[in-house]
Image: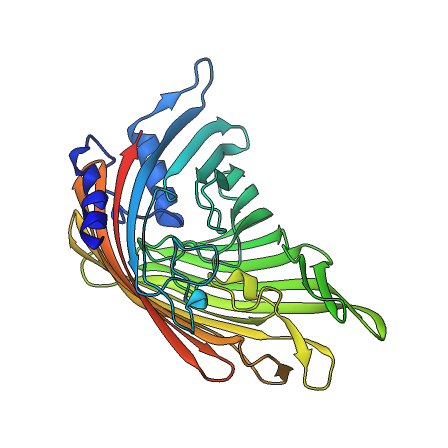
Length: 404
């Protein structure tokens, strides 16, 4: 089976043509590195809508992933590696092929009296529910660098600190959310900028049964802000988040309704290292912000306090990755990430997760200008409230053929 998977993953090696040159992180599929690639391709292969000044680029890629996992994960989603889905009991091994990472992209640029107006569309086949369906990841309009409206990366996350993993989801403890927002930016000079946004809250949740039921909803949009510096040696970002969640608890004694406030802070960035190498880092922590992490351990961030009142749990994630450029067309990305939920002063069931760890290392190669191949080793560990632990591992082979 493994030999068949490897053969299938390498079947695309016969394809090839021309790609944009000078792409340092040539295998990036999300974040600021992927956006920079698209802008470079727009510049290299300019197309203009007739009768207008609008330049545009249409492209994407077909990607085939071959995966062999030691223990099949819990839940419907099997084609990205979740440390939170590691089984604690006996589980069969799992092997599969997937084209769900395949992606379509549109980007355009129009000069206007108020600056350059950009439009952006990104779609793939990877909703995180195990199905293969068209999913819109980004859809926005941007005016120069001072205003953006639509669906894109949250202001609380750092799209420049995302490591390039062959695995679709990536590290557990890094912040990663794409949602509808309205964001303004104020340049402060010498590489500094201040940004603030009103963002979709995504706080709807329901759980429980006839005896006790919990339901949450957004009391208002989430508020996010960040200050960011970008220079030749890398970038630095300090971000904050504030949210308000309405909670309704229905039990034998009646219904209780209240609003709970959550907040978080994140420090992240990148540092130029030896040669073309880059160090990526992030540390984020907060109460009620669990869903902003890549592999959330608490969907709502709400739990029952020690004294019987509703309380917010604290989620803390730390991520450190290193990107090494072996040669212009060879690179490796290696690192680890952890995400933990604080148990202090809240009641949590023994089988709930307290901490997860995610680690990966890969080797990626641009075999031909339009063909990228690579392999990745992934390892994860999950720890429950009762201190029981479980581990899992995966091997992934990927081949990506660029279309434009």
